[in-house]
Image (cartoon, rainbow, N blue to C red; front, top):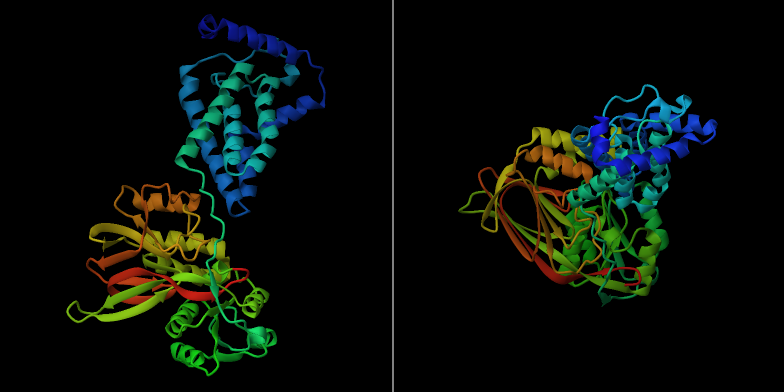
Length: 498
């Protein structure tokens, strides 16, 4: 076997023996024990799995880098051990080639060509580096050390290590083709608008929803401190929120409407502000307040600055028309959509996540809720703009959301004039497992189950059972038809340095 391999690759064999002699001539020392331990730590990928586990503790790109590194390592290990070790049989170095005290024990019995340790090490480091270059660079010495240790301990010839390293790098690049680089998130852009200056809150009427998740008894007092001249109305659970918002907006002398609460509360206030041609000041508060974040108001000081200086911008709104009841005499509901709407399993996922969040924390609760929802749920059949689809989730965002390959989180532009429409299809084979994998690994945009497009209008009909519809976190049951459209720059909102 050895002579057959050498017969066609004599020059590689001569180079290997030349390099091994130089390694053999190195004086012994503590470095021998170091490389032996380093080599052993990488057995079965244990070293890289441990590093990936540490990286997974940091969400975002670091966690994605860890997953991509492990994926690249798995591909490299499979290709190396299953394919190339069978196609390229080669005897490993013998004791006469290196000092016995350096040899790794037990000596591997599989083919020497190529080095699986080297393939895995380089695949993991390059895979991580394609997502997080700084971490990949930090891992490069460790990967190089593992690769060299296979020569130093007599487990491989140098050419085995070089070929294995090339396979590892190739595996990382191939998996990157499956897992494209995220497109950059555009810079925040605002279309400036004129709005009255409100020093001390003069001319500002504020609605505070006490059902907002972060409301405390000190909330209203804090607002009175920063807006001492404002008219502040606190809405209790027994009060009708929409009526209170309308009454507050109609307060004599009101120049702008302020709102403290979650997405549903902000949406209701936006509708009142648009109807009365008032600018809207969204205050950070409530269970979720995505519009305040997108508007650049992350704290009260930013809200005070924008209102005092009259800094404002324009935003598009989504107008949602939902039909419920009998087809011949439907009940029509018209809603303002500032952020997102969804149909299908997503409302159930959110409900489960909120139930689990106090005990598990939001990240883990989200994962557990996702598995429970998709394990127990079934896809629904919808007609979207005349085309039939079986879907897990249909999602509509008011404006382009980023990242494109995961759950929509950021919206740098609030007046781009489009609906961000996404369908997670159930038509493909193993769609349930593929959706779970795509969500876990952040490959939603590149998955074949995902269909992304942009539109200015979308119409969705329920086929069979009515739909469960959520608009800015507010649920609407028994919906048979829903129509979305964009109303360009209909809302003026306060935003710092717009």
